[in-house]
Image 1 (cartoon, rainbow, N blue to C red):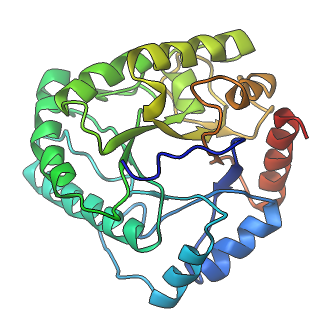
Image 2 (cartoon, one colour):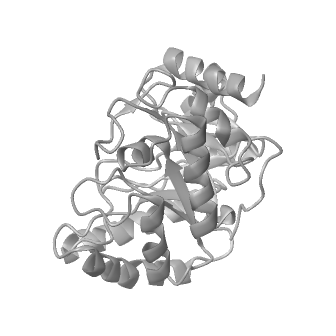
Length: 286
């Protein structure tokens, strides 16, 4: 799997806006907030329309080899759906995100693990396998891995807890082109009480034992407006929610997460994001 190398210390960054030019806007925003890693959308996150991007902007992104880059696929993608129309659009959207990610040297493409909608988890995982395995088999050299992002546990989601990742990976035969992006707000909402350093350590221990540290490629670092076990995806700035700031310090030292890039998806704009980046760097020991 491409991009497996880890950093001496986990770089801290954020999802950055790209309206007005991925490099022109995104890189300027990254500099403004002190980001060391970034995540971007390469198409409308809430629609199916795609575009070829700007070759000049893409080239500028590729030049920033010091700035680990990730792509977040559109939110509408659901490979577990019983709707064939939605499934077809989901596959096309994911393949577009992977192709665009390859052109900007992204380290991975984050995709939500999806929902069965109806019929239960087993049926949803079977549909996911049928649709995702061919995509994974077609991934060629220079195309980033798929990074599965477990969800907050609402409805008939296919994966929310660390335990849920096991049957998901089993359905995909533990494919080498698949990694994981953990979202701390999702973990908390799904029932992992990571509001203490001990709780964060326990969750990461479990991930390492069940999934393997090498599968963790990115962490979305978000505090939570909603309480533990709420199944509600409500992001908050670091230290202002129910998780609190201190547990995030464990991400820099735990053997499962040490060296893995950390990307904020907390409420913005630049001022709050810069403060969150600074808080995380402080927890890193600076």
